[in-house]
Length: 166
Image (tube, rainbow, N blue to C red; front, top):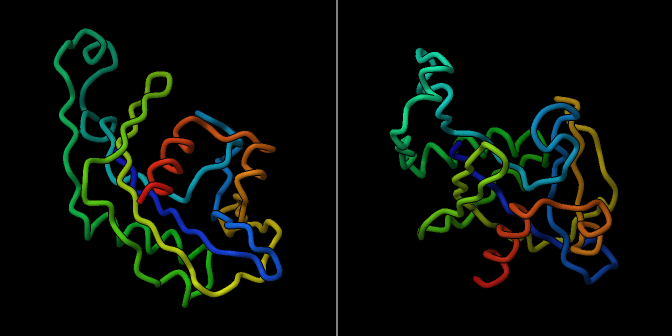
């Protein structure tokens, strides 16, 4: 899977601690209920190989070639998703694309190739609680302490480490 990931940070009014915008994964499926940075899938091998049977895929020893998705396409997909999370002015703010290699993370039988876009919102965010999205998922601003409390995946740790050194 190729993912476009939006890493958005800000500060909460009257709190100097940096907060990160997070969304909760659906309650079913891989990594159910885990918190992650907002992201969209822009390519998956399942769709690319849709005509192949599972048995045939299992027998195949050829490596799947993961394409490089056009950065504009990745950004547009993220813009659409983020506009359902943040208010319009903040959702449309330009994110910095990491132009170097993506982060690769393997979990179970899935390999995520994650292209990161980062933005820090200079204005204070008045929301310090979580809220429900139209799609039923939950979103919220989390400090790193909050992330420890809810437990985040090693994939989220990799992304956070990369963003913090930029």
